[in-house]
Length: 478
Image (tube, rainbow, N blue to C red; front, side):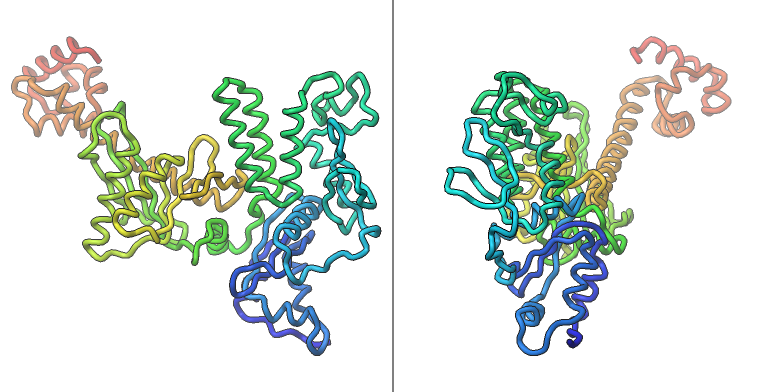
């Protein structure tokens, strides 16, 4: 046995991997997965591949020599990693995954060919019209995984089907087809979702569920909509990008790049938001994060000039266009990533402006407030991260900072407008006196509560002007 020389970039990557369960991918220079494996500790399992291998041109040595990148997906448990691995191997067919020739030695998952199908663990495939997934290498883990699947995809377990509900119905792991609590069409949807999951087609499954959720909401079936969303969230926690990040902000940026398929970590990120009150005093903000931290000297404010009324999409267009028109004119560096506060509509508006400026190569995403989903141009389904994900924390913090900065600017303009409108046309009260009053007392609302004595002693007004101001404000609607 001999040591394998590990390239420095792979050494660094292995050190960044989490000591948590999940699935790992060895990829070649083209980015294609050549091996997919599961692990209870991703870092330890990946490290074991590189410790030693046989002399000569063994299959293991050939595989190691082709690895250029290591990626991973985290799961809550090793049992869920088992399911995910099997589905991904089935979908990607990596050339170095060992094919399990002796099917009788390993279990399969079977979705039975019945009117209301069941999910079963079996030892062999039969020509019975059922659908089979696997084989799986660990029956103990597979039983654990089936328990997880029954919570997400509540198919019946009883055979033959009785005429009354059992315990599984009462604990929410069966929809009760035996008492017609669910019809064939709705039950078939659950079966299809399970098939997508077991086949490793998580993106397609999430798209289907999101479409169902919108349909339920449109029909005001809010309980069904919430139940569907809970399934989406559970899937994102179970098999989404890992929540166990190591290496601080550098690793978070690396993982953000991986999740968004960026060519490099987004060191420089610019985030945009719009703030307006019923279309009045509309403003935009741009915040700038460098290495995951705000660089406030680079923040920019925009007073919307070309849009009237309530049209957030066009407001976003104007702000993005103005920002990057100036960037190009002044030869300023482009960001590694643009983040838009909003969903598909806001994202599409901003993306069109970038394209119009020949900046289609600049990566851009949207983050929707309602569910904290990430949207990418041209991708129908959102990226759903665990709410505890450091990657989501980073994007959310940038979004919230853009919102805070926009709202602060909007309030500042509103205060100025308030000063002009309510203190205007008061005889003897000039611009300097207006500004002094606002700086001293903060708002017209506060000034309205003051006595004439306070206006004289603290506000610097003469008694006559204080009396006029007090009398005028007391007659105006607050």
